Amino acid sequence: MPHTKQRTAFIASIEQSLLDETFVKLTLTHYKGNEPALKNVYVKKVIIKEQDKLSFTCRFKTRDIVKNYSINEGILTILDYLNSGFKGANLFTLSYDLQLEQLAEQEWKTRKLKASHTSLPDATHDRTKKRHLEANASVYLHDLHITSADGLVLKNAQDKYKQINHYIELVSTLLNDLPKDKELKVVDMGSGKGYLTFALYDYLQHKLHITAHVTGVEYRQDLVKLCNDIAIKNKFNGLHFAQGSIEEYECNNVNILIALHACDTATDDAIYKGIMAKADLIVVAPCCHKQIRNEIEQGKKQNDLDFILRHGIYLEREAEMITDSLRALILEYAGYRTKVFEFISEAHTPKNIMIVAERKQRPKPADALRILQKIKNAKSYFGIHAHHLEKRLGIESNESGNAADF
Image 1 (cartoon, rainbow, N blue to C red):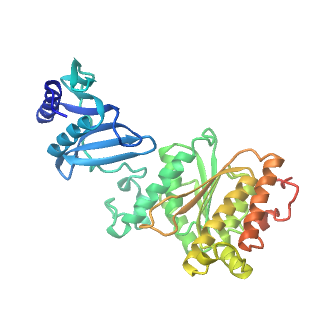
Image 2: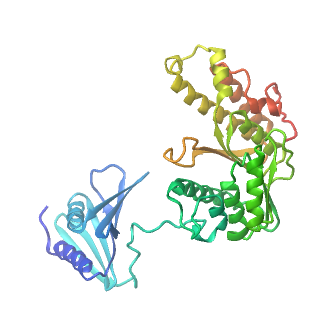
Image 3: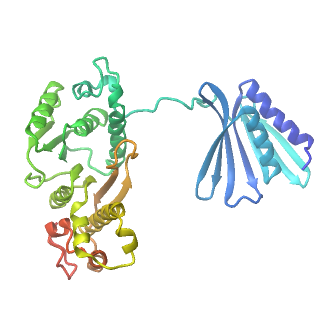
């Protein structure tokens, strides 16, 4: 399609606004081309590795695709989009707004309007990510060997620091429905060295200003003493670490129960404790899935997945998915809304699946029976006698749908 005077002038206006640094953004609209589900394109200026770029966000019906171009490539790309289906465009600058619209096959019209923006957006692409926990302001991070004495994150602790912040970022979104006008009781089962336990207490107490009593439960006495010493040193009066196993620890009136990387059925023990304590929120990141894998191997069930499960590595992955999927179903039966998702990249840890359960109303008897039937069918298909969490709750033989008093 040949260039028209109006469209040529529009492209020139884009180039000039980039030269005199008044360019705010550009939108391409009214798409009539052949690209399936493409709706709009949004263009902004960004700085990547100290070079000016044009960043294109192509908005499709169900996804966005972002591509970055040099300034010259970006101008050519805009022109190409106008040639291949976009019938409208809007340029926003600090001096004026400019609209471009195609009226007929080769007839374009421009309209100049008063500037709708008075300042430029932040073009910094390589900006430092905002952290929920500031390394230089958290003395306990130095005590835990995450930072140096002057507050800089140690080179060998970079991944751990990112993991801590990502964990707090995830948990922060789950706290909205919890009571903020009274003390929160939190139990962290299998707290280990306490990295995440300290971070959660710090975030609740000093960022959200919520009065919280946080207990870390850890079997190894040396780690319990270490963490308690650090808590006392940092005057974290509401943070305490207790020695004991997950199975033996008694917890009542808990708002949040957490168990990250508890091995095999210890995760089930933690979930059981949370359900029986009527915890508002249960957050677990399982580790190891030996119980269900052993059940599958012993059951030797013949089914359509034999050609997959005869390979050990696939059997292991299948056991993980079955174990956690059954955990989610059992939690739903107990009255929790559940989500299972990857909470951190495998580059940081292979133990990257998280189950989040929020306490809601118990399901109606018909829905409870439906959930029990799903559990029964899954066990039958894979040759599983019983799931450990199911046994702990005493629901494996429940045929009525009338649940125990969780």
